[in-house]
Image (cartoon, rainbow, N blue to C red; front, side, top):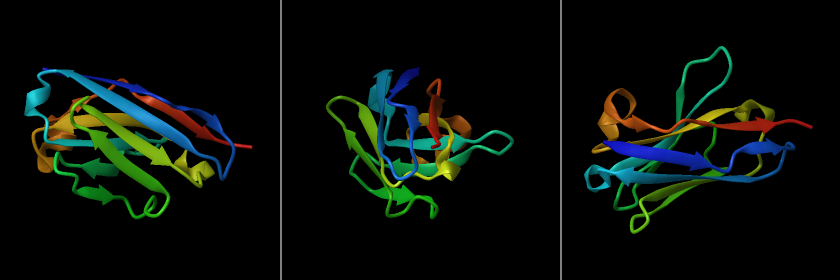
Length: 120
């Protein structure tokens, strides 16, 4: 069992930046893949970015060049640095952790979500 606790969401103006954090505890030795998904009102949950234990990353096309995912394996923590934020980035952001990338959406552990609102 893995527990994930997110932090760092909030309200930011367009063009601004936020940094999300997600700390894993519990059965964390089984974690290889960590990442972020988001869900806007009325839309399906979508992948934002993933990172493996060796640092391989993957990003949704909509955030490439603006968002950066990183992790501290010693702290079992994953971060999402979000720059040049747009109103379309407004969503609840969820942390996810799983033994492999391919297992994340269906079998991964989820955090409680943190709201990110981009508005002037």
